[in-house]
Amino acid sequence: MKLQILVSATALASLTAGQALAHATFANQPVKVGAYVAAALQVPHGCDGKATTEVQVKLPEGFIAAKPQPKAGWDLEVIEGEYQKAYDNHGDKVTSGPVEIRWKNGDLPDGFYDTFVVYGKVADATAAGLAFPTVQLCGADGKVAWDEVAAEGVDPHSLKSPAPVLKIAAAEPATNEHAGHGGGHDAHAGHGNSAAVADPGMFQPVVIGDLELTAGFTRAMLPGQPVGGGFVTISNKGHHDDVLISAQSPVAGRVELHEMAMQNNVMKMRPLKDGIPVPAGATVELKPGGLHLMFMEVKEAFVEGATVPVTLTFQHAGEVKVDLPVATAGKKN
Image (cartoon, rainbow, N blue to C red):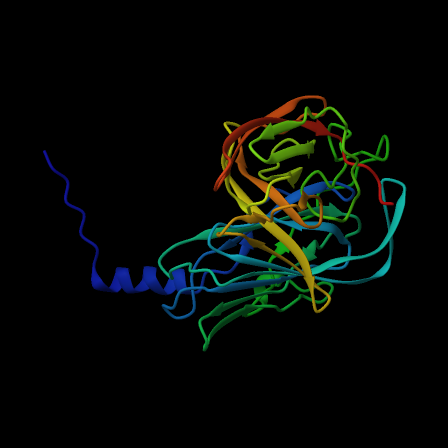
């Protein structure tokens, strides 16, 4: 017996219109003040049928120490600025940090849905939640803005283009400075330069051809954190240039080669599709805030004291397997 489902033209038109009017929203449950969260912004459609090529998200006051999740096929731009007041972050007073995130030069067709994730701390918020004004760009002439922030006492749903709101849970007394954090690890367990971390000194130097690898490490991660950074120093003691062309690890869905750099006071991160050059006679450092390995789709959070296996492939020296010790993240210098 077969069931045939017929959809009338009127119903289909109604469905399409409903999809077109869908708002950008967060997929998260309510978050407690003082907690860290991977805020997942849902982008449900493009601009009148056009594909989304850029997503701009302004971070609200009170959302600090932000770290965006890179997306394959998209460039990432992080704009930093001053906070309106100082916030406590594990005993340190922070007065500045990322204030806007931009995923750029991507391609999200109108008929598809995706999420854009930024990790950070909800340091301060009201019961109304935190609004993240968001703009979608679709090529040179398409734009959808979700940037209206509701005034006190106004229902955001009454607005035509409401900014996505991260809902806030009822407050509970914190038992220590790591409340809402879990595991006692530093919030900056990723790859950025917003916190310093020392090489744990447990990496065993490796020599492959003319290359010597030293000072390798990665960082402890929070449960559920989807990405992590890896670092190593590569010295080329030969007379011929080489290139680190790829990396793989069984603990991640994929590993990408990335660079973070300041351009016109804007921190930008981009994948290096052509690899990382290692010139003859030179030493190249993969370190926080610069060149680094990016572990994507991590299967289990990296735990301090463990090691992370990685296979590095060089253009001339070939493959080499290394184990990166997992260090804890330290405080700001």
